Length: 208
Image 1 (tube, rainbow, N blue to C red):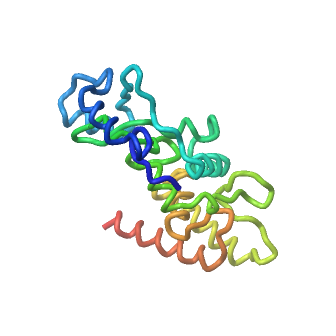
Image 2 (cartoon, helix red, strand yellow):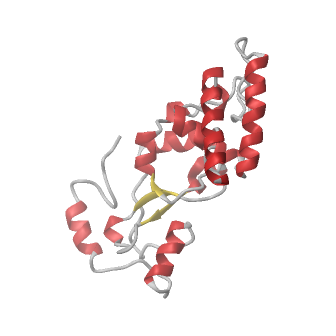
């Protein structure tokens, strides 16, 4: 994966960065800094590049990641995942020369914006596997020959716990990905027991 950051290539980045210090984002809202930061964290601070300056090209690894994550519906699926990212620079400086691609907060990724390169490194594209039928992973895992009545009972308990916590399906899917580095389609019985225990602890902490 390319390690290029921001604009240009390693050969030209120094000259380009020097040029960018002369210009700023177009259309930066005239809000107090704290308000700008809050908007950015919510994915609502839209910034436009100055005329003549383009966002850096996505790497092949980033393109594959977007395609796979979108197909598994871990990010918004429009335009093969391209709608799930935006080109921006982080607060509080919002320096144009530090701009890069970020995953945008939405109904799928319910977190702060995060560098796309970071997501590619932490969650390789190969992790985003669809179900055995080729469909995006849903709440319940694939009904493999190892899927037992005991696992079904645990999964029903997990569903009740996520309902109590007010979780959406994407929140549950990302929880499983972060805990086990697999999709919900690949959850096995031991995983389910661990998930149920974790959720019950969360429920107890919220009720204290």
